[in-house]
Image (cartoon, rainbow, N blue to C red; front, side, top):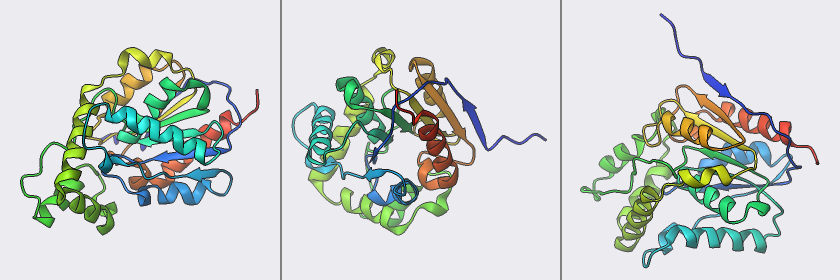
Length: 255
């Protein structure tokens, strides 16, 4: 009986530009600790930034995603960040895509993992049993293939969010806006090198989404990882870091 390979690679080679700064963008229910292994590894050679996106502060009005793009631009300016690599998971990938489309000259390259922007089975729809900690834990675990990586702080963050009416309104609003916004017609305008790192067991943004990103982006590399769900940098940190390092090293030449 044949077993699936641990990873599948599709690649378009392309020259790049020197990398100095990396920005890691978390998802809708993500925490800064999601990026612990990435930050630990890449801080040795690069300036690594992990902004806490103000997802829970945007609960009124429309254009929530545009407000997050504006927040990111201000963050880059305030921290004197120069042409960063944007690495985004889930909604963080969506923000990275929008930023790159709006400010193409400000982005060195792009890394997407489990990104929304084409299709996403949102986790922010409804929470009928918000007071039930075990229920919330089970809902969080649904997005992971490797359940053992779901630590208490991750569950606590989600549990805390759903206890607040304003936070729930903000989360649901962002989730629905992200689901409605399909970036397919615009992806051909992104010419910077793009790395796609995807879990083969991702049920939120399935591998078919990754393949569509790959087909629509002019300069993309796709890495599919087995035994991995929606959060590859937590579920398969060594492979995630290997693919990211290979991508940065391959393109890390001045032109």
